[in-house]
Image (cartoon, rainbow, N blue to C red; front, side, top):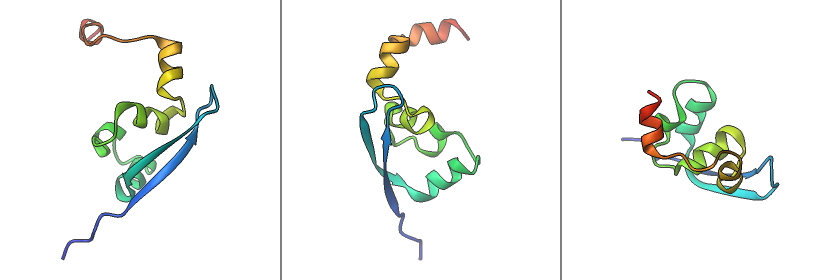
Length: 81
């Protein structure tokens, strides 16, 4: 019998604007693997939105991230490779 995935939620305060954002339905096992350095966050938690993963990584909300770095086009990313 397979174990049922347990889930957690994490509230994170943005380091720039200090707004609190809550990320829901994080699989506990995936989060623990990421914390332990067992994989990249995008591979372990592809079900999260990119802004949610960024909050976990840098504690920077989507609004502040875009204010600091602007929008990145997919073409810009491909051109830099």
